[in-house]
Image 1 (cartoon, rainbow, N blue to C red):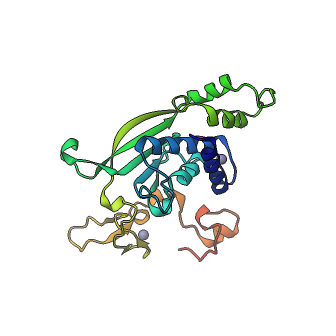
Image 2: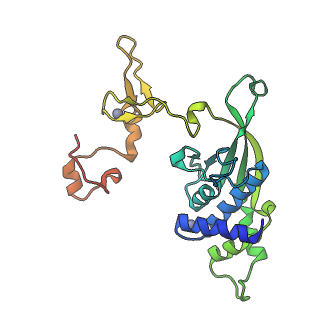
Length: 248
Ligand SMILES: [Zn+2]
Ligand SMILES: [Zn+2]
């Protein structure tokens, strides 16, 4: 891609992420490559007819994720960026313009053609081999600087492996979908569609339960603690940054 175009995207990624790093460059390159292969043009522009074609699944919660969001225009808040944190520097770019006919999927509906790209671990070795020194000829002492240099210039084939995949995406997971909200029958908090379970009690009317109330053991992230515990110095990460009402 033209250097000026890459520079613009890197600049925007730096603004969004707070700094420029090797992960940002890799993320920008990955998203640019995906758009090129899928023939998607300028997806983040409001004028682009392609701007609502992508739903991107990222497999890591690191720097590259922010860069992918900048290039693709996919955002968590628009439901177009979905985090599946499997700790891999990989992303799957689903093209909503490429539905797969159910007949090709054994009758299963709601599948789409998608491109999965994974960053090659060997790219780090290539960076060391090809860029032992910086622009002044001095040996790189900072691995991040060396990788930043290399990830700008290495060809796509040295950076990524690609595969076509099918991804199941029912209409309720589409970016613009709006479904009914229900109230959890235990904690009283509102819950979006499909994010609750119904009590299996066959004798009584079914009640909606949020995931935390349906499976209290899953609440390791956000477990209510007694207010006195908080004042003693222990903390629950969920309540640290805002005022705390007394918990039960
Ligand atoms: Zn970073
Ligand atoms: Zn609840």
